[in-house]
Image 1 (cartoon, one colour):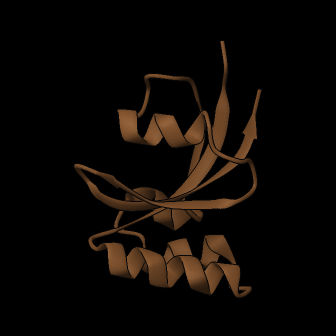
Image 2 (cartoon, rainbow, N blue to C red):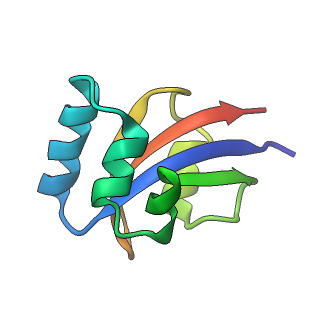
Amino acid sequence: MTQATARHILVDSKEKCEELKKAIEDGQDFAEVAKQHSSCPSGRNGGDLGSFGPGQMVPEFDKVVFNGEVNKVLGPVKTQFGYHLLEVTSRS
């Protein structure tokens, strides 16, 4: 079965998500941005979600994690929790 490792940043607005994505693309460290801005408890760990398979996350999240480009900041992705920036760090 396919497995992925990913990290994410969760915020409450699309605008904030886009602002943070630009900051990361302009050179800020993903993990530091997650620690400063993510409302998810994983933010304390730089947004690291560890390893997981399809169906373990919400469908909107799964679609991006298992189809999106690896090592690229993806999003904003809207779920019932808010807006996410995702970075798939590996997929096998």
